[in-house]
Amino acid sequence: MKQELRLSGSGGQGLILAGIILAEAALLDGKLAIQSQSYGPEARGGSSKSEVMISDEEIYFPKVTKPNLVLVMSQEAAKKYVDDLSDAGVLVTDSLFVKDLPTSFKGKVYELPITHTAKTELGKALFANIIALGSIVKLTGLVTEASIIKAVLNRVPKGTEEVNEKAIKLGMSLIK
Image 1 (tube, rainbow, N blue to C red):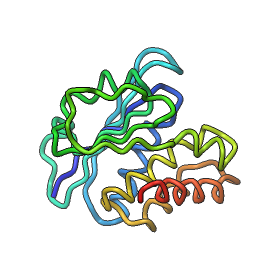
Image 2: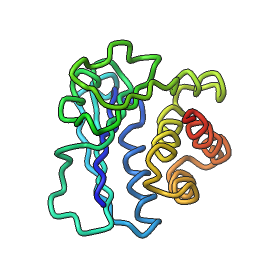
Image 3: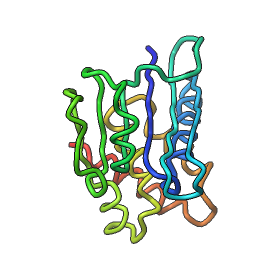
């Protein structure tokens, strides 16, 4: 079982870190994982993406070619990074920033209030990436809740562990 995921949005939304955390959680679960990233020359605001492959078997080609799931956290990312998502795939959007869904995609779409939840429940939009991770983990079951929490806590600044763990659980609660 190999799964390919793309986490995309604007620079500064923490999606590169989210991809690293997701790959680390897969490793903690004893799976194989590869993470890659690309972003525009702008430090913040330009488009960015983090791609993660998770597999039970060896990964021979380290690039995502046909994602099973694409997260889009900006309208620009929705235009730029969804084209190769098959209709059997899953599209997760941040409903605060993505208003126009790609018309070419006919698969399952989850329009989630990711950044809105970060702002209203945690007081800061900067937790949106961790909330998105919680949603992805709940949707896919690719990694265990214990490993995603451990991976998050390994990567976040000291003193923010409690709020980041709450962010993971809030993200999971967005999936009904």
